[in-house]
Image 1 (tube, rainbow, N blue to C red):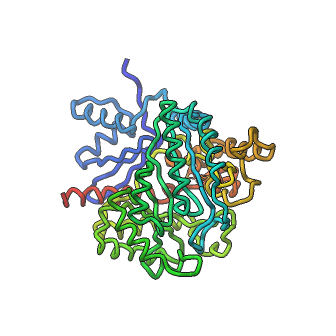
Image 2: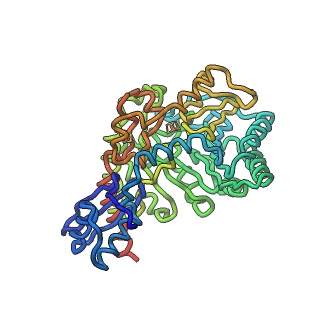
Image 3: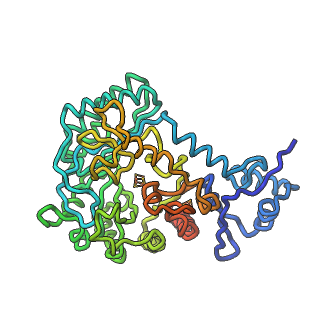
Length: 446
Ligand code: SF4
Ligand code: SF4
């Protein structure tokens, strides 16, 4: 029996010039161009749920099924997502560990959400972390380790010892240990350090540049107020052939107009094709940085500016653009049982943004057998976070991409009807047009 099919509730159509159209499905992440001559057939098959009659229609029908634009009538896509969300929440097959070996930093950035603290992870704590990891790795199929801080490159020996320890544990239990990544300000990461990181199993470094020299140096300065731009850029030049370098450009009201001038420097140093660039929204995490609150863009403002910035990148011959990825069931690891963020003193948190807070937001400590009641309550808060309880999320076109957004911000905003919307809610169509433009220009270039 031929199954009855229906259009997916996650289709988005975008009209282009010349009667061409794009179709994006946010449940499958597929973007396709509909040629003018096929428009009518697609319209009938998709919107009117007609059955194919000719060979040509059958061919298009198959493509629509493959891209998730048409789904089996029996499938409730919302329930499917809900089950995916629930399953991932308690799935222990991936052990996701983020370690901040120190909360100290050699920078003093305007918008940093971390209170500067001096402690570094002791060797005793490193051992405790490996013992903690072993309990989780033995039940997992995959281990993922990310280095965060403070500034993690202040603690290279710790990174090396823990990377080695984790690799041995993964080997002992036959678990895949994914190449690790490090979030660093990039100031100390010269060629020699990048080689050490690579040898330790780290393949990717995220480095922040907030625009060209003047803008960056005003925002990301050393403790003594000195500039950091030239040295970071020199390090990117020296290390881009060793590690995958992802340049994060933090954007707020004060720099979004000028941030892109950084492209001139990257081009001059022949780095445009060797690094990845993405824009990130600066937000007022927990009010820690109240001094920058007036400068933060709302997500909607950020999303609109993101379009302008990517447009500029494309006009400058840089054909990489952020593409929506299907959320693996949730927005981040904070509302999953197998994900932990550990501080130098062994405190465990669910969310990266909370580690500089005092223990009151922790969910345990790696030295502790059992969490204290308040820690259990913190764990419950994240595990109980549920975008499917929110009407706007249930009805949202980009739910498969967003999954209710950042749980922490969603909880702070505390709305009964909506989570913490992601940028796709505001710029999906524009970004897809840019993506299409990138692909077209790449083709012409090749
Ligand atoms: S809860 Fe939000 S801030 Fe915390 S780790 Fe997840 S996405 Fe980041
Ligand atoms: S938080 Fe906003 S963008 Fe995200 S799923 Fe809910 S309504 Fe959609």
